[in-house]
Image (tube, rainbow, N blue to C red; front, side):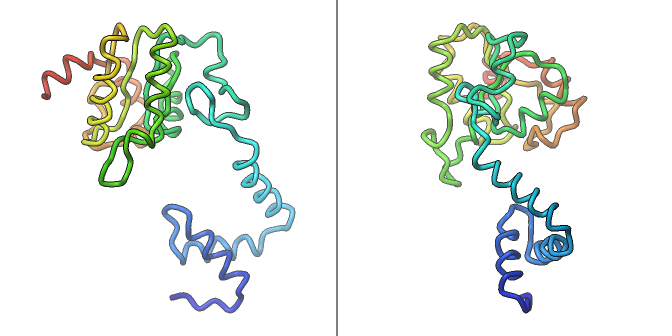
Length: 208
């Protein structure tokens, strides 16, 4: 228990400590740093944080973050809209884009199926993905979800729902370690895994 002799400082520490990976002591260090920082810089920071909630959209097509209703990737005429890469969250798009190996578009699920954590089909952007498959001319669906039980469960659920509607369903090669999140993989390994993606049906039958 930290002894803080200012209620305002204590309140700031409490809010900062709600951020993931931030404990009370780290929150106190950050709050004290802000206390010593120029007012103009602190106001700029709070303004940027406010804009996260007021000026950032989720793309209406793929659910990536965007400064407009349609993100720059979906709006880019040079991207191959017939290829959709399905990812868990926005951090995975950043990781894949950093490889410079992919020119298709994305679909962000917002998580993976995990009953233990209360995440079911309805909590994810799955129906929106199925609608895209129905309405758009999709030649390939790349399943780039984590190599975990939850990720594999979600992959299989998607596969069952679209296998007769998409010409090709692939999954990134297992150069990504089992249980590893895409965002933590180095760019070279991730890029090679994307380029060496394999047919999902073959992979499923081999592992099933």
